[in-house]
Image (cartoon, rainbow, N blue to C red):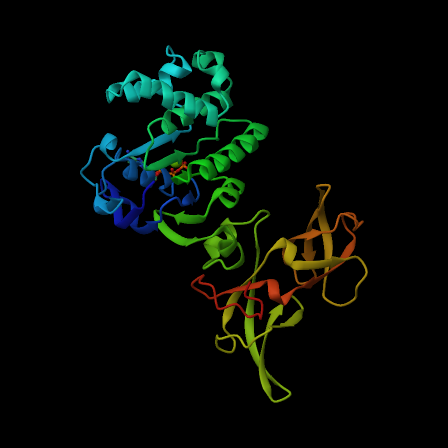
Length: 368
Ligand SMILES: Nc1ncnc2c1ncn2[C@@H]1O[C@H](COP(=O)(O)OP(=O)(O)OP(=O)(O)O)[C@@H](O)[C@H]1O
Ligand SMILES: [Mg+2]
């Protein structure tokens, strides 16, 4: 177990800077997830921590000790890859034993560590099999076992579940969560799967174009995204974005702010800190609406698409003002394409972003 600190880490390949001054403090035993679109630098950052790639500038500390110049095997890390990277002619046992043999551990200790890892991963019965005799999930378990036996200070995972089918991904995801609970180890996990990020992470690091856009707990990112990028990236179906303008009006002796949403002026719960007439982007999650077929208050819209998922219904709707929105409705709502619906938005669920895409302080009493 260990802490990890990244200070102003950059990485350039030739003239192109792919990692831009990344700062991060990881506490002992924390589960950190890196997410972001393809090519944003997740693997490069992980590989620099592992020592497989050299940082162009900045400092990497593991347990307080600068390790920029240490070779991977001296950093006390173990990495698990998407591709498993197992030796095809070795058994699961031999694959797990390999690095320990290289470091000349006593045979009895190697055996004890492998038995222990196999027990944790519930794969004692698979130890004599070669990779081709194992399923994808079982191979990935061997790859994780190979990391566990090394007793690393930090576990690094680069999209370890991407090659698995949907059902197996779910069960392996739970195994990794259980593994983290059992080992209490510091783990850094790269994925582009939102559900993995949300369910596994103590904190998520959202990257875009090599820069950190926000670091926070899954719920912080979900409820208080710092910018449009994070707001649009976290959450599925994604947040709806609508352009609007702030108006401050005097009402009963106090100033209240409203925002024009489609044809309706929505009062904000608190006075918004931005100036009169400021252009803002409203962000509304699909579940931030009350959808009805009958109500005559709210925004009128017509149904463009209905997706019934069983426990909920997703509706793509077009408002009278020409805004396309995706909203979540109760499965009991019975509407068909072309029919009218009414959308009432919950002001507490509203997010506001300025013209630079930065979140404005929430205009609501609910701070969660
Ligand atoms: N050896 C290299 N030489 C030049 N450019 C590279 C090299 N390795 C990575 N890059 C570039 O660095 C950027 C970040 O790549 P990286 O593999 O870290 O992205 P990623 O976030 O892991 O993407 P993915 O989700 O597709 O795995 C990309 O633009 C990539 O093309
Ligand atoms: Mg990658």
